[in-house]
Image (tube, rainbow, N blue to C red; front, side, top):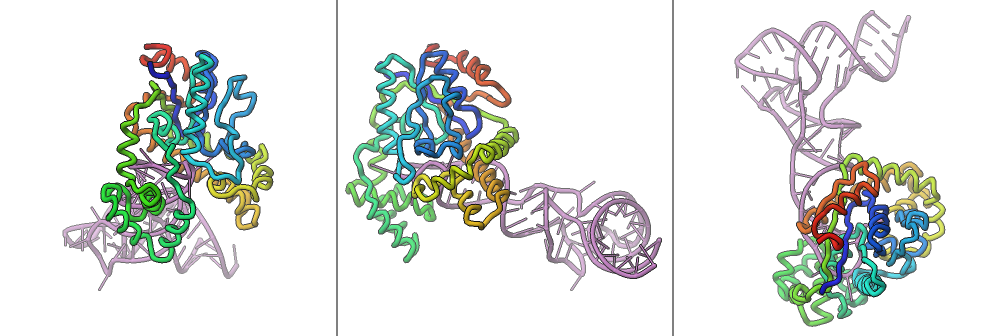
Length: 309
RNA sequence: GCCUCUGUAGCUCAGUCGGUAGAGCAAGGGACUGAAAAUCCCUGUGUCGGCGGUUCGAUUCCACCCGGAGGCA
């Protein structure tokens, strides 16, 4: 008997938070956040992290589990998320995995294996240096030698993936391709029902634009000032803070910074949609202009959900 | 009122000595297994202001009209 798991995916600002809470209220669930930036403590306004009021008493896991100066990766995430899901199940509650970080959602629901600890930061830095000094081409050729399948899959300009593939091989002696093959054969303990929140593109963009304005009103600038010196690596990738830094350094006006944030967020939403669209297992619900209870009514009516099968 | 410049992609603009057009930005599509709010790849979307004229053929030349900018009054 596999563990039932409900997944809620969708682009930023599509209403995932409220829908997840509403589902949890109706079905005795707890929320497991799948958001690569909301894991950081203190990054609240800029990541649109759910507030206490929005949570309505529903426990939320995987929020505030790292400090802004710490690196954090899918590997860290899956370990914590799988643990949280187990705990929720042990309490007899329904785990609801909700968020916008596609890789995190996939890593958990497909039970990808990151347990072996095959990363090496200094090796990665060394490869980066090589790429910078001699060009990425030389690394791509290396990859083509040791793991032609990965080389074919990865674009010759995609430095990050080329380096990672080389790193995996150098650390473990096993190619990325073999790793993935092995991971794919690992059975998932979850019986996942995947819901995607669709949203009219233009209206979603309007919501994003307005949300950024609200973030500014709520004190994004102050939050950025407070965290600026602490954010590095992973956390500084977050949209909202790097643009604010431009403003704080006097390199951009506040209006320009705000527009940069809006644009970056819109593009991010677009990439999220592309990522989720590619998964045929996702059942889509149009959330445009709907309240959370309305959306959940529709989800409740679906066949195959943990409470309806 | 007169003179000059100007109107081309969502924006800023280039261009065609007459053969229906292209850059940057914006946008759209796609990939994605340890940085994923990251990273990478692909794509020009257009009554060339309007209506006539000349021409085999007009976005290009001519006339007029409409809209902008500047100058003289």
